[in-house]
Image (cartoon, rainbow, N blue to C red; front, side):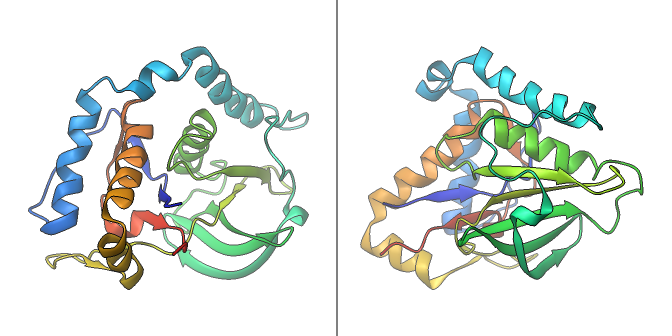
Length: 224
């Protein structure tokens, strides 16, 4: 089974601008707006009321500082539910790798630029809305849960670790795809293409656009 997952750094009703990226990344740039314009079968399959209920559950959780009702699918509700291993990034968000009951996870929290009382910043709220609303769709990273700091000023949330990035994109250079991605593309090209299209379709059909488009935003499982 081939799984491609998108890091949820997406914005709703944004704009995507191609910058002449060659090869695979140029193809992905071309696919994304086409999927947004098309009314895919996924858009018809998703129940809008259910999607809005899941999104509202995140708003309700943020709005009740002393009596939070967690979404029913969450298995993480406090920091002690997760074991942190190492910090892997500290920019717009602080990102840790860790484990939850033996399963690898990624933990995201307040970035170094976030204000002291902003509940982790709009970026974290937006990601949690996106993850909860599209829970279970192809390419959508599973949201395991979240918690607030003891002073109720900052939030951290936990998602599944979907594997390493499919490559690296640097400014003014062609993207360098990982050996695992290159091997999968040669060995199972149709399955890989299907996984990429399903990943794009899951969020693009709901009006989301990836505004930081680069290979690092996509992860791939390690199945042979």
